Length: 231
Ligand SMILES: C[S@@+](CC[C@H](N)C(=O)[O-])C[C@H]1O[C@@H](n2cnc3c(N)ncnc32)[C@H](O)[C@@H]1O
Image 1 (cartoon, rainbow, N blue to C red):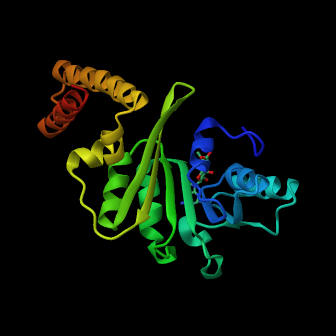
Image 2: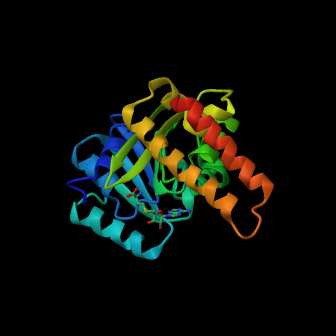
């Protein structure tokens, strides 16, 4: 993967960035996503935010190598603090981090959100708490997809601030759009997870030390939901 050829995962994220967007890519690492989009003429401006020095330097290198310093600002900052008032950001991507980390970045950076940005999120696990944050903060989930690359399943969640919205516990767990679409790759992901959770439950039953009842019940409840959903 580089700024010329994105991974399938980042290519699917790119597909949800509106044409002409002013993008903030937070946790940008090498800044491949904003640089690829700018090279294609798909976005108007971008901020590449990084909290760590080495990826920050890598992002600066990619932007410099492509002569895009005037169009893409690379900033060393924690989360949404990379966004400045005059940036007029219209889309924010947060990709390749755990769902809880993405949630925490959104929550602690609320002051930097203008409420008009599209959020394009690609969590690696932790989708449920991330959807919970979106619901609690009035973000409607417009689109969800799951893709498989290199044996891993990746989720993409696209959301916009649209006022109060209520999702059920099952919708927060599986994804409201996924439940409507029931794509083959979504069903395959949950089929695999079901097997893993069943193994976990069996291992709890065989464990030498007693596993807390709450933990056992939680896994059993999830198995029930997944079985019902797949059924
Ligand atoms: C696994 S990389 C993902 C890079 C790229 N977004 C992608 O999806 O390929 C995660 C990046 O997020 C950065 N990161 C983690 N927490 C962050 C935060 N609070 N603010 C900014 N960047 C953060 C890390 O330094 C790392 O470079």
